[in-house]
Length: 420
Image (cartoon, rainbow, N blue to C red; front, side):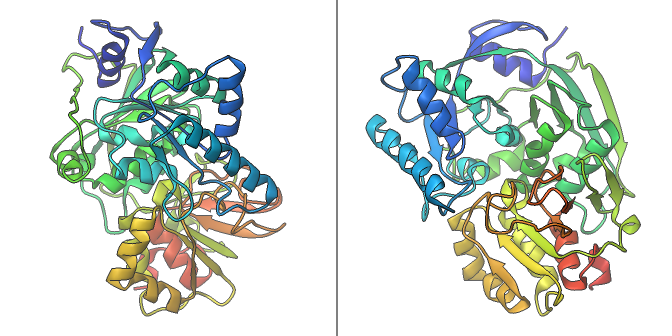
């Protein structure tokens, strides 16, 4: 019996010929990362265990991106603590305001994760890097402290579920719609502690930005990790980013999967997740009468250049509905720079959007876009639990950037075709 890509990566990092689902292993870590919310806890645990130096200052990344630019004194103190630790440890990959990006957009863009890597981060959406053919998963701050100190992590090998997507995507349908549809089918615990392995001609034709979006939301199905195989799309994307050698792993033809889902998505509409679960998914045509107060385009899920281009195409020459606040959160400074050079920023501002520095603030109801009681938002973020983006009596609808941008124009959940 063969092995899956996830099993091969874990075996390689554990120094074993083979691993089996359910097996407990200790594996070497290629990168350990944390943000301004989780790093202070990890640093405290690191010191409490008597650790003095991180295992490798080039393989620990600290990125204050959640409550930054600092929303209040407490946030500023957290950032100062992380900054001091980075300086004391000589950590190479420390990035803050002016250089930082939303961590799960910036880290791959900098080439810090490559195919075949094992990455752990004190943030659940660390699974994003599976788009590159890496094993990447979120861990608690205590586990991260151990990884920072020893360069190792203990893991239980997950079983793997295979998701195959066939057909041809309709206009305005992308990676966000594919993953929302999938979560709608299997539920928020449908892949609990499983590896979600994505296959099929549709994902083979998907851009890297779309793949990052899908891997990012594997955690919303309860998965341990989401993962794609490396192909020419991956290699081309890595040409300007990979500064070291990497290993491409591939699932064997006779690898064992716990379950296989085979979807024909030719007729798939843009998808919308209704409150209060990412699995409460409907086609956009069934949600068009829902008025919104706020639209958020960005985050680690849909804050990449391709997402910004979709928003620009829909909003160019149009105006945001007078009742709506449109907040645009590009994922990195480089994306903002590129948007400026292409004239996208000007077009979005003229449409009535507010352009934010890279931050996770509105996604978790932290700052720069918190919802009041009774308000309703449609957002390209990844979670819509009760109170996720503000008051517990607010509502969050999840969509891709096309639906979000169209909704900003019409003041209600809308299909992009209604705007054009």
